[in-house]
Image 1: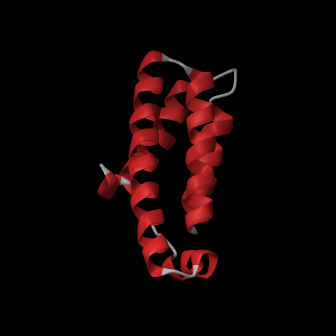
Image 2: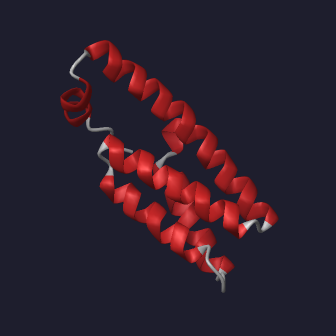
Length: 102
């Protein structure tokens, strides 16, 4: 996962705000990743789609558009009809690339 500190610094200007943003971003992203795993396990595709959408927005805002695109794929794949095997593959890819948060 790549956080674009320069982008965030341009948005906030103040180093304390940048650090606070990063802490909040990491905390909320961890919660969303846990939720994605639980929602997949229970087959709650609507909640999974919403969580992926939220994480996509977090990542894009932080400057990691590559992972944001992966979240968008997951968000769309959680719409009926759901291919659980392909969705699991994409979710595992996301979890692998965000392992430093967990």
